[in-house]
Amino acid sequence: MPRAHSNGLELEYDTFGDAADPTLLLVMGLGAQMITWPVGFCELLAAQGYHAVRYDNRDIGLSTHLDDLGLPDTAAIMGGDTSTAPYLLADLADDAAGLLDTLGVAKAHVVGASMGGMIAQQFAIDHPDRLLSLCSIMSTTGDRSVGASSPAAMAALTRPPGTTREEIIEGGLVAQRVIGSPGYPPSDEYLRERGAESYDRSFHPAGFARQFAAILASPDRTEGLHGVTAATLVVHGEADPLVHVSGGRATAAAIPGAELLVLPGMGHDLPTELWTTIVEAIAKNAKG
Image (cartoon, rainbow, N blue to C red):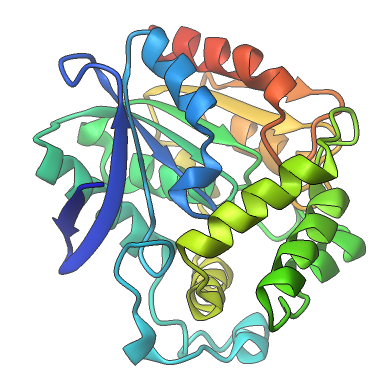
């Protein structure tokens, strides 16, 4: 797959559809590689007439790993001392803009999931001239009073990943059972296959830690979101235990004219059964 140079980094990316079509940039979440955007989902977007681009954020997947920055002091950051956070969500939004530069794309539709939604929101604030439309999926504003994780979901997110391939894949399955969609539970076989694909492509827990620090250290985006003028869709699972639906509601409330789509039975994932619903909503928002 190709790589783009952005902010002194290399970002691994992949594309679907005709490059002559409007670009739709897909931004994934915390510790998640671009393959977490399923091929079938991306192909549906391309079928709607978009040049879909997915990529690995910095410090994850096959993009540049920033191990020279060391590990952050997560406890200190949560206590208000952000000095060990090696970068912020704004830096990841700048990476996205740099990727568009490499692709020769002046403006794009930007769709982000989870931390990717936070990055997409920051992109809308910092690069409004590059944005055609915005879609924030299962994300939140950075206001700590909304979008909180359940204790079980936070435990699943932060538990030690294991030391062997098998332990790490099984640990991912257990975590997905906690945070995934109760209305659309995938099979264990499917989750193991996805976990194995992810592990075999890249396993980089230090990058996860630095990205988590970026989330914790970044400021509340609510005020900045008040100034977003691009057409905006907010998608959230009603049963999301990792980012409570209040985070999605707050995001939609912060952006003038934003549409909110709350999906019953959906947790913190992209169930195959909801791909068409979500893709059609994204396309409708993008087409204004």
